[in-house]
Image (cartoon, rainbow over all chains, first blue to last red; front, side, top):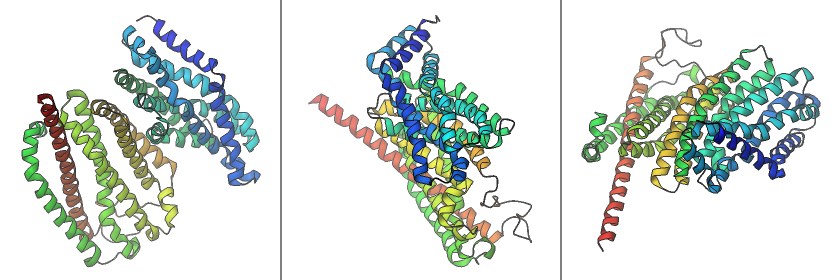
Length: 219
Length: 255
């Protein structure tokens, strides 16, 4: 199999994100917005905020991964790109994986970069920042992969946003738990390894499921 | 036996007898365990006094909600690989029953735990790791049903739902482990149905008191039969609906 369908999938999802500038900024704005709501709901005690800060950022990450999921595969289904990919190459799973990784790169990775800023605002201790960023990068990948499965399954459903959330949220649970523990206990804790295992597992299983779901959606 | 029943006709013949038998036996057994559990056996003060009577529903439903999710995934797998229509009918029928038993499990669990573990109501559902993983299972069932309802054609719904059930079942052990690690000090007692070394608060005897164990086993058997009967009933109504659709289509074609 040549690299061209993969490359085209990569390029098209990148350009989609760039072309509608708001598409890229949307999850960022949502992430920052959710995190800044926290002091309003929990109060402004510095000690409390610095304690719950990492957890709040995890929650914001999980929620903001949902914001764009609905469009990931739906756009390809509607403009026919999905059919072309299916004709062109046998491995739709690989394409789905590339699409998800690209999606993570444009709307998950920026959140990781934004983390120190918001973490600083919430008073998260600076020594927790590196584990937090690493954890958000890995956990974000898990979220986008399982979320991608949910999005692929409901690609042919219009207004699938809530459905995707309902399907994907239970699958987010392990990464959330291990992620929060990892930020708490640091990089040399078993939670870090567990989170890494979750990421690898999702990388191994989710693309196959997405492939099967997309083949179904294209029919 | 399962491959024998894969033929819808044989299934219909079998279930016609099996549904009422399972129902009757199930009701009698559940009734017996509830009667003894609620009225006859002495309350165990260490387990929350009278509240521990919720156990006779809680423990069987905990086993059934796990078992039903495994059955759902198994039926989905069979349908996905071999396309036995009846397997999909089964999967579709299992989902609401499984969701019902998960709900029953965490409701009775929180009633029992309310006093039994000395924690408040709200503390329990969201504060105990074992009830929490049942709650996650509940959402998995809900997501499954929502996906089925959202897809327009039967065939598409069946395939997508089967993929979801299989993705779900590979994740269930991970969710279980992670939720167990989330709270290292769970307030839930260790499972002690047939344990040899007695758990902490009971000093004499090994495992559960035989009077309780007996009622629990009646409950296990009864709820399993009831669940089987309900699943088969839903399956029968689904088969009838499909047959009806087919007959209607034939009639319309002929007209």
